[in-house]
Length: 68
Length: 337
Image (cartoon, rainbow over all chains, first blue to last red; front, side, top):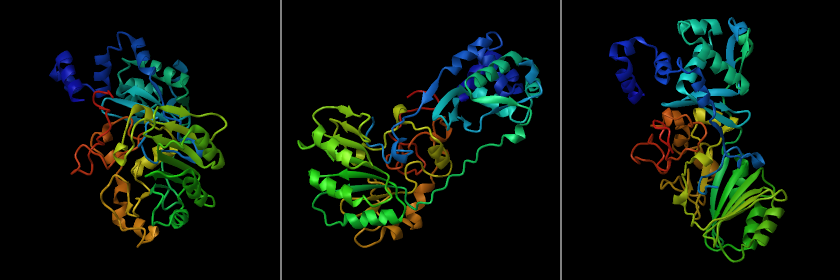
């Protein structure tokens, strides 16, 4: 988060930064108050894990010697 | 959303938020998938746990009411959360993980003309409750020998067998499919140093068969990549307290050395002189079982930390037991692989 804080410092000024809770800092950084729909962009990153290990009661591989 | 003003927003118990340094994720351990979210949303979700939607908005001076509504609408639409008047009726899922097995998985290096008594090894593993084994064949094993080894597992509680074999002309697809169809506990066969890369998998076979031109050695292990992430309840819960790779694992090398993993130099006696049960109950043997992802440098700030297999054999700094796995290319700070 260090870079984020630095960026914010330049956007908001050091004093303002100290007084803002982190979520509000981020909201301001993301300018969500100007474009609330921009949040939608963050919800499109679904991630399905490998299904190879669900077979035969195995929940994880024994090794990672071979990538499928 | 106005009627939710006095309600609480909760994620479903099986949807668990995990914070990373630059972004977070919601592990859906019932549907085995993971949703990446900005840390901002993680913070709002956590803030919402003990506040009604109205109180939450007030916390932000009602400046972000619309944004908060959008968060919740989206999470509800994706079946990750819901509003309720009675949050106490929806406790968090217990993340305790227990296993009745002393050893749950084993890697056994096998060569055809060995002095080792494989029947005894399988019997000892059975007594320890082992259910998954990986057989790494060396040399030039014959089909008959492989069948002999698989037969030795027949009356055990082993439910899944992976096999790694060096390519030989006899390992044509017909022979391998036959072997697989006769041994339904075999769920994966990897033939390395093959002439071409191919994958054989169909509805008639339990096992997936891979031919790879790569030469697989012990040092090939430890790969962590996006494609190998695993999202499920067992791994998620096990990773909270134990090492995701080494917990309840034992290796028996081709000369009988007992190790945590084939890639380690450190051995804990030899199967010819010590019973497995005795070797694995040594506190030193179990030491690495307790290194969690939450203890490991960089990994502890990674949003994928409960979905990957750790590696303690190949690390960025071999002198530091909490060093990041060497073969993980993901940087949680930049969120790039």
